[in-house]
Every structure is written in C-alpha cells, then in structure tokens.
Image (cartoon, rainbow, N blue to C red):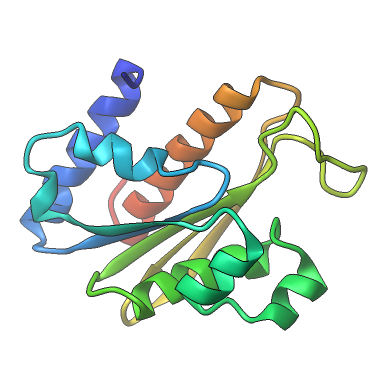
Length: 165
C-alpha cells in the first residue's frame, strides 16, 4: 500500500519507539490519517500507536485538539503556529508521549501566492522537550505525492525528536 522505503522507515521508527516504551499520537489534516495508516500496516503497531486524530476542518482542530480559534483566524490552518498547536494539543488530549502533526495544502486547488500548493507544516511534540517544527515546500507535484512527502517529513521529525539520526 505504501512505498517500500517509507514502510521500512516507519518500521524502524516503530521499533525505536517500542524499545523506548513510548506511545505516539498523530494529528493529521492534509494527510488525512496516512501516518496512522502507515503505522497500522506494521505488526506491533498497537504497542506504539496510542491514537490518531484526523482534524481536517478548523472546527475539528479546535474541538479535538484545543487549537485556539484566534490562532486559526490570525495565522490560518496552514501555518507553523497551528502545526505546533496541533502537536501539543494531541499530547494534551491523549495518553501518548510523542505527537506528530501535519497541516498543509495538497492541491490541486486552494493555494495562493503566500501559501502555495505543496506548502506543508509538520510539528513534533514530546513531553519535557521543546516542540520541533519543519516547513516543507514540495512545489507543483501531485496531491498524492504531496501527502506522501508530508508523511515522510513527519517520520523524519519524529526520529529527530527521539534524538535519533
């Protein structure tokens, strides 16, 4: 279902989380649950994946993750501030140790000069550690490719917050 390199990376990450006895929560917008789906393709995912939030609408970001309406109004859903709030909110609203959040514009419509198609923000939060963030500009690739590249970026950020190369 997922490209082999991505599945391998997720498997290695799952093993690392298992070894550290850490639970993961996802908060996904433009990826629509792909990160959680990727992990559940791997045997043993139940040891690691605590839950996943698919918060596609602004209202769901507010209700499920506690993202402030004022933050959404000021920065827009596709922003660093909202990605960080999503990750931190996912930690607060779960029993996980680590959260990863993704929000972006997968296209083909909805982009603007300031926020073009392919713009994705990823954030990772961990209890007791500063929240990490990454801005990705994938450019004019397909919707599916933007979403898969966002999943890849999310895995990289989780690895980084774990302190792994």
